Length: 537
Image 1 (cartoon, helix red, strand yellow):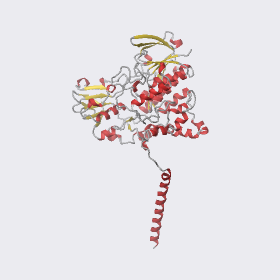
Image 2 (image 1 turned 30 degrees about the vertical axis):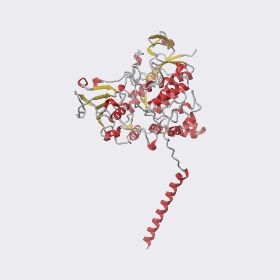
Image 3 (image 1 turned 90 degrees about the vertical axis):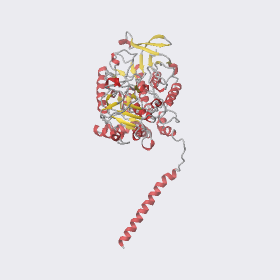
Image 4 (image 1 turned 180 degrees about the horizontal axis):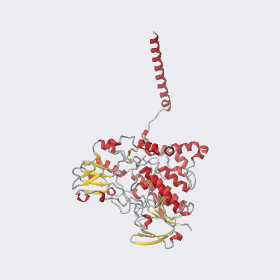
């Protein structure tokens, strides 16, 4: 009989987990506490306990080709950076195309996940679920946790002296939905991540004044790179990774800094980060709103007063109405009561951000406990494919001591690049991480071989954007449409913006520069000849 796998959560990673289990001949049963698929991408006006929350204006900061599932490209008419409603539509299309809904039990909450009495032998788990007030008990051979880590706000109020005296209102960014509540008010946003940048920029259009407080600063990059191409399709290329790894660390770090800081001089905007290798924030509006004076960037908070805030530079906000703390989240899983799962306190507890190291049996996997410099969706899909292979027995994990040594070495490398902190243990270089996991699966693209068998494709893979389809070219889960998806990825990208067709004469385009160059050269030679003749006279 095939192994039963419990999947907790029916969002983007949960859907990938269901499909990956089916591909490996496993029997997935997904428990989703809400009425439909989508997870965090299903926007609601209200905050739902245990589920991530979006604000109404959220659009992706990774382009659609870079955040598609590896065997299911987004439709060509989807925007390059889709609104959250389009991502939900895409997830629904994915679930319907691969017939995943029949494996999901909706409106079902997972209450507890505990080890079976003979776990050390079987690796099985006891799971208690509740639906319509009725609890059920079941035993599973493996568990994949896909419930995300954006539902338990991290709000360290004890780090802000005098916060208890403040008379205004303060919330965590999880509870922010729309900018209307802040019209005409003076607002302080605390944090320097993507949410902090988005919220500060959005409310600044209607607020009286917005302050943005950051301890360490951050790089800001636009979604748009040179020639109007998506920034991630320009940045995330294998050729760049090869260059980074070939260069000395100091040189690679300097190039990284130059790339992220080239849009504008961050020191003039109060944004230049103390950690020069910090992950950038993707935001197209924040610098403009700073130029307009609608946002003022300030250092760390020194002290709260009854109606204002004093910063470390001893400047003060004046009368302050609202505060939004965009201070991140705790990676909490209340349905699991096991010391090995205290992830924030023990950064060495996970092997490649997926498998708890100290479990006697590798029958539990976590998806999404990572912050790659790239899209999370194909990252969690790769994790799901690996987990399914391990559960089936087609892939093996090394001994616990080996995994722990790897985790220690990996965390030291991360600390060197990203610095130390609460979230740094989750950060990773996108392509390098996907390649690491793909080696475990056996589906890493064989570029050298392709240069002999399919040089056109090899060049696209090496010098073009590292789209997820590269990991369907070979090995387990091979998709015969992968090659075509890679060769046509720019057509799908640009199709969404070419809504006004421009007819160009290809002959004119190629001949005109040559003609102009010839005329310029002729004129220059003629002028030079005349000057020479005059000198002779």
